[in-house]
Image 1 (cartoon, protein in one colour):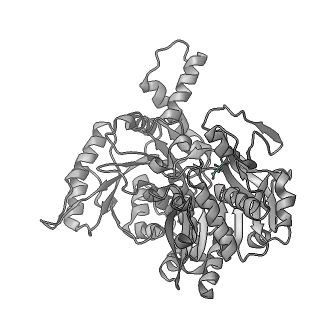
Image 2 (image 1 turned 45 degrees about the vertical axis):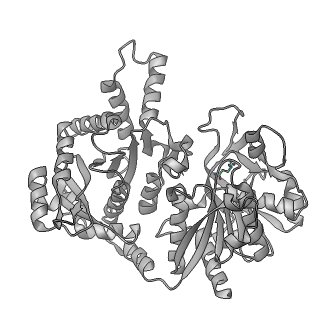
Image 3 (image 1 turned 30 degrees about the vertical axis):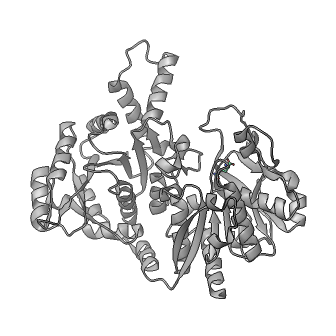
Amino acid sequence: MARYVFITGGVVSSLGKGLASAALGALLQARGFSVRLRKLDPYLNVDPGTMSPFEHGEVFVTDDGAETDLDLGHYERFTGVAARNTDSVSSGRVYSSVLEKERRGDYLGKTIQVVPHVTNEIKDFLAVGDDEVDFMLCEIGGTVGDIEGLPFFEAIRQFAHGRPRGECIFMHLTLLPYLAASGELKTKPTQHSVKELQSIGIAPDVLVCRSEHPIPDREREKIALFCNVRKEAVVAAYDLKSIYEAPLAYREQGLDQAVLDAFGISPAPQPSMGKWRDVQDRTLNTDGEVKVAIVGKYIQLEDAYKSIKEALTHGGMANRVRVKVEWVDAEVFDSEDAAPYLEGYDAILVPGGFGERGTEGKIKAAQFARERKVPYLGICLGMQMAVIEAARNVAGLTAAGSEEFDHEAGKKRFEPVVYHLKEWVQGNAKVQRKTDDDKGGTMRLGAYDAVLTEGSKVAEIYGGTAIEERHRHRYEVDIKYRKQLEECGLQFSGMSPDGRLPEIVEWKDHPWFIGVQFHPELKSKPFLPHPLFADFVRAAVDNSRLV
Ligand code: GLN
C-alpha cells in the first residue's frame, strides 16, 4: 500500500503548490522510491477540456486520452512518470459519477449527500492504484477555506483516518508576506491558514512557506510553535530563477527529509541528485541565446502554451543556449504583411489552437518561414496551417482551407484540405464520432503510433521510424491531397500505421520546416528533451549564426 502525502495551500493562490508537489516527487525518486502524482480540482467542469485556455491555461493530455489540468504537465516533467486518466479529478467529474450512479439506482433509494456519497467517491478515486507505488502525492487545487474545496478536504481527512497510523501526511503551502515598512516577515496569515485547516480536522505535518526573504530562525520557531509542527518541518520556498532548480532548492531546505521524518522513515536512503545537477548546470551555464516567435492566439496568458514553452527550454538545455520566447499575436497580421512582425527571429513556432480567428496570420507565418528558410515547427493547428499554405501558394489550390472554419461560419467557403474526422482506428478498434457529439471528448485524444518515412528528416531526428505521440484534435489533413503536395516538395514523412492519417509533413528543400499533427511538447522533460524540440532549437542556433 502506498504512503500518501496530501498537499494543500492557504493564504493566497499561485504559490507554486504544483511545483512543490512535482519537486517532492523528484526528490523521493532520487532516493529510490516510486511515486505517482494526482490532482484534485474543486471546479465544477467535468474536465478542463472545454475550459478556455485564456482562463485556465493549457489542457494537458495524457497517454490514455484524458484532458487534464496543466499541473499534471509539471508532474510529468519532473518525475518522468506518465500521468493517467485516473490522476486528475474535478468536482464536476465526481458529481457526474455520483449522479450517474443515482440514476442507475446503485444507491438503492438512499438520500444522496455530500457526506458520505461525494466524499466516498473522492476516496475511491484516491485509492486507485495504491498498490503500485511507494508514495502517492495528491495535490488539492485552490486554497483551504474555499467553499467548493470542502468535500475534498473532508475526503482526505477521512481517507487518512481510515488508513493505518502514519501512512498519510499533510503538507501545507503558505505565504509569509514581507512588510517593507517594518522590515518583517509576517507569520499571522500562515497561522490563520493552519487554524482553518485544523478546524476541519486536518493537522499539517509539513509547512512549506513561500517567502521573498530568508526566514529568520526566530520566525521559524514561532511558526512551528503556533502551527504545531516541528521546527525542521517548516520548510522555506524562495523564489527561483528557473523552476528546474526546485528539486535542488527544496533538497537544500530539507523538504524531502521533513516528509520522510513525518512518515518515520529512518534511516532514509541517500538521494542521488546528479540528474538535477546536470539540469541546473545546463540552465545556468549557457552559451548564447536564440529568439523564437510563438505565433498564436492565446498570447495574453502564457500558461496557454505552458508545455511548449517548457519544451523549448528543454531544447535550449540540449544545446546549452537560452531560448528567448516572444509571443506574436497572429491576428495582427491577418490582413497585412507578416514580414515586419516576423523578421529578426531565429525560428518560428505555430502552436495548436481552435477556431478560425488568427488563422490567416498563422498561414502567413508558415509562408514567411517557408520562403525565407526560417526554421518552422507547426504543432497540430500549426501543421494544418502549413499544409493549407502549401496547398494555396505552391500547389495552386487557392481556396484551400479547413472544414473547421466552414463549420464555424455555417457556410462552405473552402476546399477542405483539412477535414473533420469522424472515424479512425485506435489499436485494433474503430472509433466513431458524430458531428453533434458532446463538445468534450469528441476528439482524437491520447497516444497514437505513427510510422516515419525512412530517410526523412524526422526519422533522422527521432533516430528511428516508429514513434508514439499524444493527440488532441478533431480535424485531419486529407490524404487525397498527398500526391499533389508531395510533387510540390511537401513530404508526408509520418503517417498513422494504417496509412490514412498524415501525422508529419516536412518541406524537402528547407533547412528545417516540420509540421506535426500531435503534441510533442507534452512528452518533453528537462532531463530528456524531446528530440523535435532539441533539433528545432539546434536549427535556430544554426540560423542565428548565418547572419
Ligand atoms: N483545431 C484543430 C483541430 O481540432 C487543431 C487542434 C489543435 O491544435 N490542438 O483539429
